[in-house]
Image 1 (tube, one colour):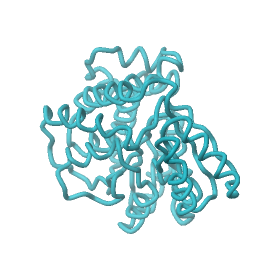
Image 2 (cartoon, rainbow, N blue to C red):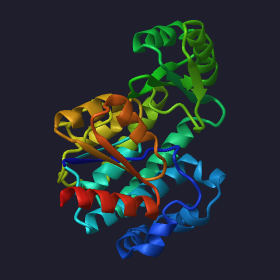
Image 3 (cartoon, one colour):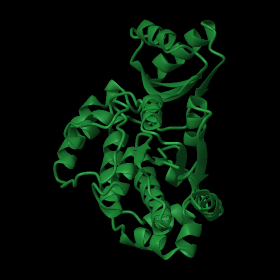
Length: 309
C-alpha cells in the first residue's frame, strides 16, 4: 500500500466541521488551540453558520485548520503519505502537512490570502461553473468566443469529464449558453464568491507575493504536487503560490502524477467528498477514502491497518 493524501479546497466547508475531532482526539485539539488569528476559528468551525463560513477570508483558515487537525490523527496512528496534493486552498493544507509551515502559520497565511481574493472580486460580479462531459478544446474555444463580453477562462481541470470555467458573470453566463448549444450535458453554477484561478486575480497575486515574502518556508518533507503544473515543482515555492491564485488548477494531472509515483490508496482529508470522486473518475484501480468525521476516521484506521497487517 502506497498512500497519497488529498486536501479539501474551498466550497466544501460546512457548519460543525471538525467539532467531533476536537472532542475525541488530543492531537486534533492541539491543532485548533494553536491557531491564533483575528477570527475565532474554533467558534466558526463548530458553531458558525453556512453564510459565515462561505466568506472566502473565513473559509480558508477554517478549512486549513480542520484539515490539519484531521491529518494529525492519521499521523498519530502511524499513517503517513508518500505524496500529497490539495485543490486550490488545499495545497496550503498539503504544505502544512509536509512541514513547510505549521498549521498555525498556514491559517494566518490563508487568512491574508482570503482577504486579498475577496477584495479583488466584488460580490456578484463574477462566478464559476462546472462543465460536464465536454472536451477541453471546445471549452477553450467558447471561452475565446466570449472574450468580447468579458473574462472567462478555465479555472480547474478537476477530472476527466469535469472542467470548471471562471470569470466575469456576464461572460460565464454567455459561455454557459454556448456550451449547452455545443452539446454540454450539464453546466452547473458553483456556490463560490468569485472568479478564482483567472487573470482577474493577477493584481491580487502581486499582493499575495508581498505577504508570502514575510514568511520563512522550510523544505517539504514529502513530495507536494503543485496545482499550477500538476507535478512536483523545483521552482521557488513562493513563486508557485503567487501563480496559483490566477492560473488553472491542474488537478487531473496532479492525480495522474501521483498514480505514476505508485500511489494506490488516496485519502481525502477535510470537509466534503468531491476529491475522492475526481480520483475515481481518473482511475478505477485505486482505493479511495474520505475523512470528514470521526466515523470516517475510524473506518480508515480499521481498513488501512488491517491491510497493512
